[in-house]
Image (tube, rainbow, N blue to C red):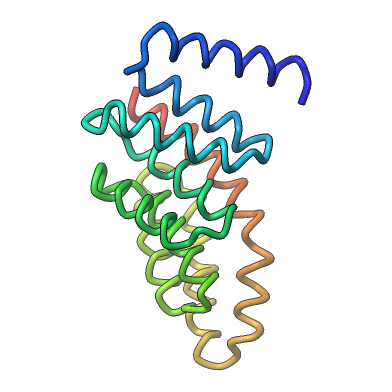
Length: 178
């Protein structure tokens, strides 16, 4: 885990002890756990943050909760978390992207494409790089009509690319939000 993990974990725990209603400390602690693969601890911290301050819960917190649940194959809980992110911010593309993954995991590729397209249309408001992904997913949709196996394989291959683009999107979103 390393010194960074231990120092960060200690700092977030101290922040929670200092102010148990500080939702960002729970969120950051949960994100830290997720980044090291401790998904059980991650979702517990995200849930604690939501419980102590439900009126302050924000879409990233719900998305992180959904991601932790998804990593644990708790797909119903992940779906609920992503939908709560959309309730918190209807224009939040990451939640649609997460729902797309859930549908793909259930082999509901048509609905996965619907969610991915929603995410892409929302992403495109922040960065032009997602226009490329829209074209890719539109191609998947056409392929689904003809060759489901190939479309599924292509979708899996591009997950890494989308994750990299998502990182760029997050930077753009932060600039937009100030």
